[in-house]
Image (cartoon, rainbow, N blue to C red; front, side, top):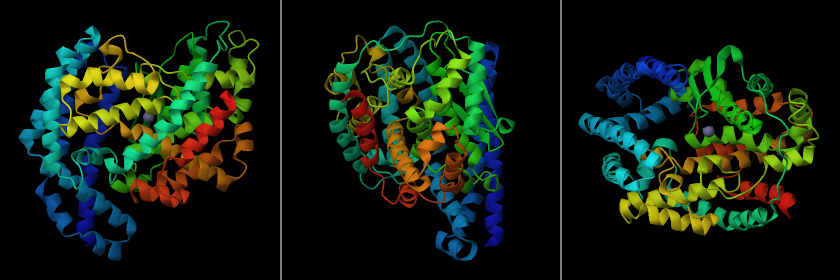
Length: 498
Ligand code: ZN
C-alpha cells in the first residue's frame, strides 16, 4: 500500500509541475508578454494542459486509486494520506467521466463564446452573444449530466469550485442576506454625503512603494513572490515558493491599489502558507474556492476596512502623500472606505451591495441550468432583479447582463463562491477575535503577525484535509452560516449610518 501511495504521489507531482508551468505562462500573458506572442502562447498553454490532463487521467492512476481505498489508507497511512486519496479519487472521477471529444468541444465552444462576449460587451449587443451562450449552456448541462449529481443539476458544476456544497443549502443563506442587506443599502444611500476628496494626485511610484510596504506588513514574503501590474488584479500561486500578485494604479485614487493589494495578498498568504512538503497533492492545495476567497476578504474587509487598522496606517498614508491627504482625518477616511452605494457593476461594488450582485447571478444561472428559463430571457430578467435588489436600471446590456466574463468561459457555478467567501471571512474573523482576545489593539499597532500565524495554522496548513464546511465547523465551532456576516454588517454599518 505504501508503495502504491508513493507512486500515486509521484504521478500527482508530475501533473502539478505541468500545471505550474501553465500558470507561469498565463501569468506572463497577463503581465509582460509582448502582443505578438499571443498565438504561440495559446498553443503552449493548450499543449501543456492536454499533457497534464492525459497524465492525470492515465489508467495507471485509476489502478493505483483502486488499490488505495480511503478507509484502509487512513488506518495504515494516516488522515493526510487519506485526504490525498479521497480528493484525488474525486477529481479523477470527474476528469474521466468527460470523454476527450466532449472536452475538446467545450474548449472550442467557450473559446469562440469568449471572443463573441468581448465583442458583444464592447457594442452592448446581447444578440451577438446569445447564440454562443445557448451552446455553452447546452454543453454545461451535458457536462453536469455526465458528472452526475444527487439533488439538482447545478450541484454538479458547483462541486468543481466548492466540493461538497449544494445549491439547496446556499440558496436560503443568500436569500436571508437579501432581507438584511436591502434595508441597509437604502439607509446608507439616503445618508451618503459628498465625502472626502483628495487635494492632489497620488504619484504612481510612491503608490508602488506603499503597496509593497503594506504587503510586507501583512507578511507577504517577497523572496517567494512578486507584485506586478495588470489590467485586473489577480493572484496566482505557481507553488509555495513563487506566488505572483498584481494590482493596478490610478493617480486620482489610492484606495483602488491599496485594497486590491490587501485582497490579493490575502490570497497570496494562503498560497505561501500551504505546506511545501505536500506539494502537488490535495494536502498541499487550497480547500475550496470559497475558502480561498475568505482569506482575501478577511484581509481586505474585516482588517483592511477597520478603524483600528487605519489608526496605524493612515499616518503612513499621510506621510507618503502629504499633499493629496492634507487635512484628512481618520473618521473621514473611515467613512470614505466604507461608503455604501448601489452600483451597476459587480467588481466596483462595496462590501454590502456586492452580495446582492452575487445573489442575482446565482438565481439566474441556477434557473438557466435547470432549463426553467432560456437565454433570450436573460437581459429582461437581469434588469428586473437589478431594480428589485439595488433600485437601479442598467442603461444597456454592457452594464447589465454582459458585464461578467464567467458565463463566456463556461464558469457556471463559480459566482456563489464569492459570497461564500464573504460569509466564511466574517465567521473566521469572529472566531479569531474570540481566541486572540486583543485583536483590536494589535491592529492599532500594525501588528499583523499573530493574525497571519493563526490563519496559517488553522486554515492554510490544513490543505484539503477537510471539506470547507467541516473546516469552518472545526475552526469556528459552528457550521457555515450567514450569522457572523450579518452581525458584522449590522454592527459596522449600523454605527456608520444609524
Ligand atoms: Zn479574490
